[in-house]
Picture 1 (cartoon, rainbow, N blue to C red):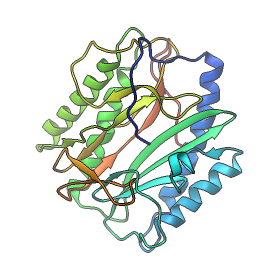
Picture 2 (picture 1 turned 30 degrees about the vertical axis):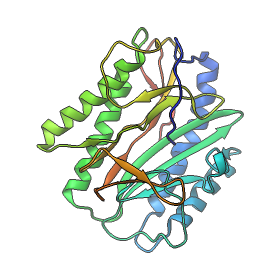
Picture 3 (picture 1 turned 180 degrees about the horizontal axis):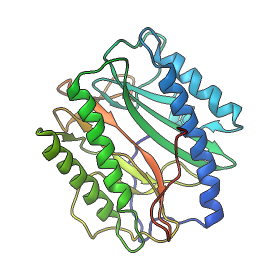
Picture 4 (picture 1 turned 90 degrees about the vertical axis):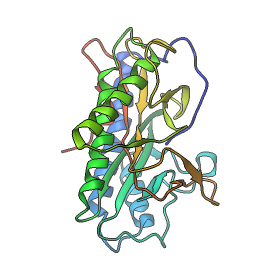
Amino acid sequence: MVFGRKSKKVVPFRTAGELDAMAAAGAVVGRALVAVRAAAKPGVSTLELDEVAEQVIREAGAVPSFKGYHGFPGSICSSVNDRVVHGIPSKDDILAEGDLVSIDCGAILEGWHGDSAWTFGVGTIIEADRLLSEATKLSMEAGIAAMLPGNRLTDVSHAIELGTKAAEAAHGRAYGIVDGYGGHAIGREMHMDPFLPNEGKPGKGPELRIGSVLAIEPMLTLGTTETKVLEDDWTVVTIDGSRAAHWEHTVAVTEDGPRILTLRPE
């Protein structure tokens, strides 16, 4: 889930034991996302997907962190096609062959948060949509690689932007980096300072230290960078109707390199 916050001098950091606790919460999120993807077939509603995620989360002894958050009604954000983020699960929102689905999911386990998002197709999707999702994943992975001690916040932002540009060069097309949305620090709260932009000049903002944790979440479109919020006050859509993708992992800085805390089972 995506919100903007102010910045501080250091990205919040955790002990090794606290990172393990966050990884346990993240593993619950990973299992929920895998279960949702397995259930996402033509004719299935996004509310049914929400129920799948909530069951996995609660059976693990965790709590869905999105449910009730600022009044959000779901355990997942289900954003289909031109919906970028914060789509509300609904019994009337029925998946169809060729849909591009972004699922954002969070869980709280023993007070620690995990937050992750995954974009995938329903059945067979067109090549442009497949490449869009791949580009967004590559951008996220570029940001993850920049989670190194001594780097600054916007070094991660810049890496995400460069990842997008590399995908554009590889795919021979432009992608829109969604304006105004990005990642965030995370720990015992889901959204903490600082906000992480998905583009920008390097070398600015709070410093990353061993144990610093960020939710890294690029959002790309096949067209515009501009969005609007629907009348439900949650769902963010592209203003030109172009399709969007959203990938996210919660990631820690360690002495041994970046550690993804929201791993999904194979």
